[in-house]
Image 1 (cartoon, one colour):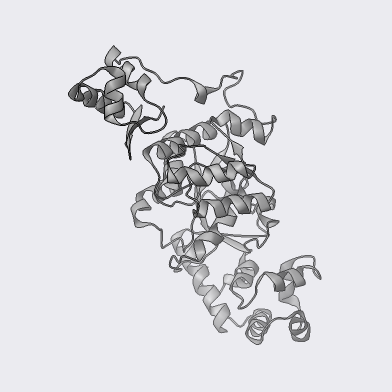
Image 2 (cartoon, rainbow, N blue to C red):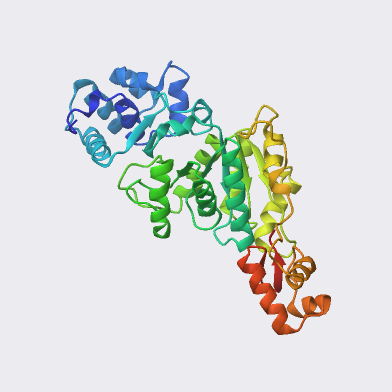
Amino acid sequence: MSEYQWQSASEAPWLLLSLLPRFGLKLRERIAAHTDELTDLLSMNPATLRAMGLGADAVEAVIAWQAGDTEQPILAKAGRIYAQCQQQGMELVGQGHDHFPDALKHIHDAPLLLYGLGDTRLLGQDQIGIVGSRNATRAGLDHARHFAAELGRRGLLVSSGLALGIDGAAHAGALDADFPTLAVIGCGLDRLYPAQHRKLAYRVIDNGLIVSEYPPGTQPRAAFFPKRNRIISGLSRGVLVVEASLKSGSLITARLALEQGREVFAIPGSVHSPVARGCHQLIRQGATLVETADDVLEELGTWWHMSDAGTEERVASKGPDLNGLDQREIAVFEALGYDPQSTDALSQATGLSADQLMQSLLLLELQGLANAAPGGYLKIA
């Protein structure tokens, strides 16, 4: 279909509405109060359009739509966008599309149209948003991966924002466990950002879905990312914050989730860690403290069943597997806590020399049981 035939596409009305200038939330709400569908606007006469509050350039675009004038600037732009989507395999999902979930349609300032690369049927699947700090700790990244894999196994689609840190770890955790994942980005789908996650983004497209409310060609801008967050929370039944500073964008996602009537979960961390303070603030404000995937599922509702029939064990709460470690490594592991401890303190607690201690700590790191942190070492299992 050429850009001059795009008007016959089922999502064409939503594409045009998404491109109308100064077609903001207040105006859309005013029109929605007087129509059955927002797309009814496209059949109104010029006097009614002006009475509704549309500006001259938006009225001109609607009249051009009615006349089939594809050379009008806004319609011509829509045609170019549609043609580019066709060429690059992007699917348009407007509010009238079967794959556009009702839960997202009814949030404050819902997107009129989403652009998708991947399987857009996933939009309607039960989802859990996993978000957190871009400057995550090793322990935080491990938590994000583990929770994403376990929640994916329990039947939840993991959604996040493809950002560095916790977001990327959540996507990778689901994919590495052979479960799909959904990413919401704050730029055009042909401008995948950040560049460090291009390879991860292609894995998401092949095994899940990436969506954006911005047309192809849109460069990433700081103002787009907070807006992106309302879609992550709007698609999800709940949002899990893994690590967050007090000024983290993840707290914006959590606030939006609460406003949308979603559950908010937070993983506690060390009182000494700056990326735990946002989670602790959320818990003080009423977010559910979680330690395992079961904690999330229990809060969401008992109707959620585990994919392993007949299994009710709390998988995430099992102790770490210390098989294969000798008594020296076990002693060091048991001396570690979840707050950083200095090598002097560990040496005193275990009676090991500095060389023996460092060898044991290195082995524990390689086993994913410990990690270096400011102030010393801590256990992460």
